[in-house]
Image (cartoon, rainbow, N blue to C red; front, side, top):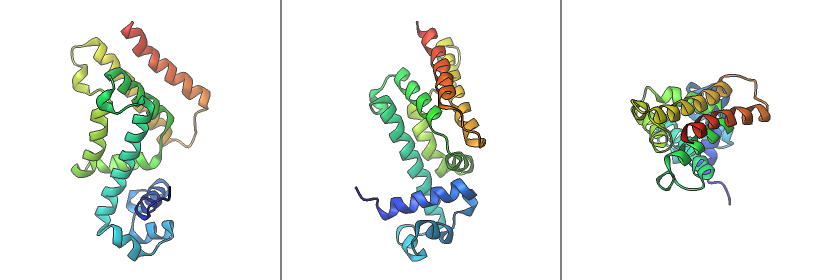
Length: 181
């Protein structure tokens, strides 16, 4: 299937964020990256704010698709353990600087944060669920471990060896498995 111009623009914008940060997203920088004219971007996005919001949504949608693929079903059809396992696998498999930068930038903007929070609420245990329930606390700790590995790989130039990443994932998953047995 052929990639739409809108998707092409959003992928180009993501590369700009990955390389230069969110502040570097301009119509000129994204048009240059996408091989389009500034007018071509304006056809799809009326303002820079519209473009940045669309980047957030694009990456959150991609993240949700990865979570659905990892679980083999949508969040609404998965058990909390299946959702957490999918969340852990996806967090451990993929980490991009662009996602981290957008999430950080988005944390100060309600509309941007809402895009990411909607996905997280469906897939990851909340801190509130951990209060007073040791099993829920263990699930939250598993989430924090997965988030920590994702953050580590987002912030460092060193990529973990796949065998080490898998060993970390297995150890994190063991915490949950031992708790439930």
